[in-house]
Image (cartoon, rainbow, N blue to C red; front, top):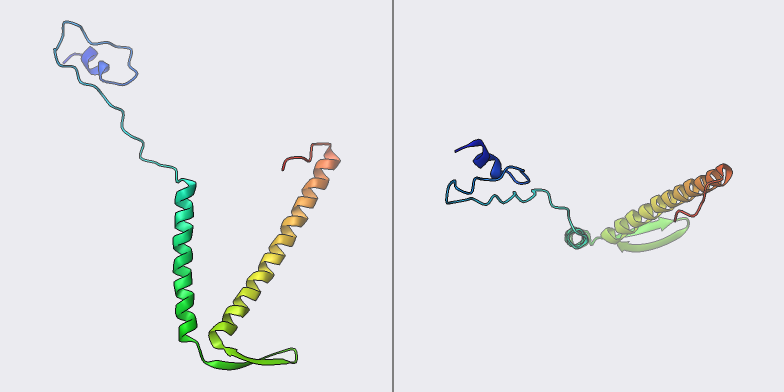
Length: 126
């Protein structure tokens, strides 16, 4: 095998095989890329699967914690299932975190808008 025969097998090579050379010419197919970017549908599928797992865990939590307890809050009093009470407390904490995060994002956007206005840049990036 000559150098020209070897170079002819490399994709994008300028070398051409001899026309009077070997009768059998191999076609070189470039390898498929190993890295595939996930699609939005794949991301949605993963999110749905994770959500279903979380819901199953929550159902198991509620079923295992059905003991009735007395809850007192700022003079209010009532009885609820333990699982429901803990779930309400967790959702309330999540709401507080979301409000604090939203206030911080709003603060940063206003600060950025004021900075762009002071510098003279366009503030219409959204």
